[in-house]
Length: 157
Image (spheres, rainbow, N blue to C red):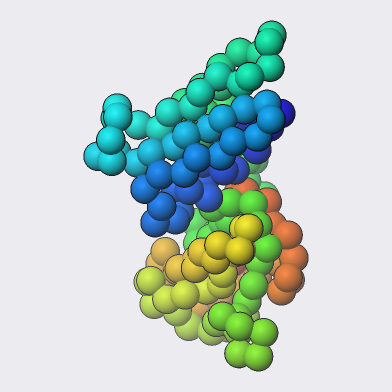
């Protein structure tokens, strides 16, 4: 049976996608997630596990909070730190034969693509939150990154 961490990861993936509804059913649990305005209720809904002594999982933001505690920021992460919004595989380029989005020393504008994170064949592009110069890159191409891990440090400017 999936735990709170796995459910939180699923909710994070769905939140960063364009899906309006997802139904995940295993032998132990059925999870139904709907976006606001797409049907019943205001937020996400989760049904109780089928296992006899199990308790229903929290829904919506409560499930995310329980599943994904706020990580402790690394000591070297400054105001220009770009963190991984989810657990997944880090890619520096849009395809294996393409040039990386950025290198150390690259100048970026707010909104420029920096990398992609892949989770279960769903690719999410991570964009610069501020304009500046890339000071460091915190992951290697193809590396698994954790939620909250510093991916880039950008010196504002």
